[in-house]
Image (cartoon, rainbow, N blue to C red; front, top):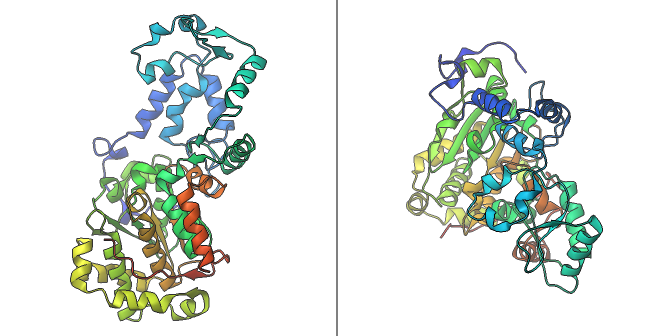
Length: 440
């Protein structure tokens, strides 16, 4: 990775983006320092020796495992008061009525529970109980009960998901849900249906030096800010960045990466090309791009012939969709679709990235399948600098879906796809095209 200054990518002469963007990362550092008054030595140990609990990436301390830079985000700084707070004064729990009306933030600021406490029927507040009694009460409540478990994602790695869902099933229920369903269940199902694996096929390292990165319904500058330093290095390496979205995100136009001196001082121009679509217009736009790829012979015929199935059905499906219909569905134009198709056609490598703007729709699975179709058509799977990448603010959200924690509808869809023979197990090598998705 080049360490030379590159003014071509500078966004502004205003240092640190002062007055131009929020949040101010250095102000967040000052706020975090103030918030842990009295526990600063412990907070420093958490930051320098603990595993990052901001995004579940697993990095230890403040080191980044992809490059030699600081790994530290505002979420982790905001968690410091919670992670360092002392035990609360249990006398405030003696009468629960005194807690009525307090906001959740005020309740958290009371401090941590130092030991198990229980409020019995008819009692005004909570009293201390032993761990044996607490476990006995919990086990008694679960015995012969119909219950479910919900697992959150922030800072929760795959191993925790795996152990938790096994334990909950051992307790007698298969009602296990997690935050992945809200966010990336459509990615889980569609990726399993097409390439046989339900998570990203590449890493952030593949961004750096790839010919092209396309963000579709994704805004990492706000939602995955740690990722922006990889985009800074990608731009330095000559990578072009395109964005397909209903809104032109200011943070994706220019961004100040706080952990890098050049970007912190001068900012970085991020997006090279923007493609606007209607909300829910992604399939119409992406099918139009695929139609252009086919009509201009920009398909990687060797990859398609050797590593995919269903391409002829997809070819027929998009050929039958008129440009007028695709334009109406997408809110874009035939020329704009051609512009992105040309970028993909000229790229030797590309990574396609998407987030909640793609998945949180009634047709979210088909949105993802339309993205997969583009990647397979150009052979952008299974090679360096290439891949399909569903991202969220914390990587554990995908892990939950892969560790046996999936909603029943998603499970049924994957099973039916398996019965049809469409789930291909050769990860990153083979894929199945899907045809006919029109976004209605």
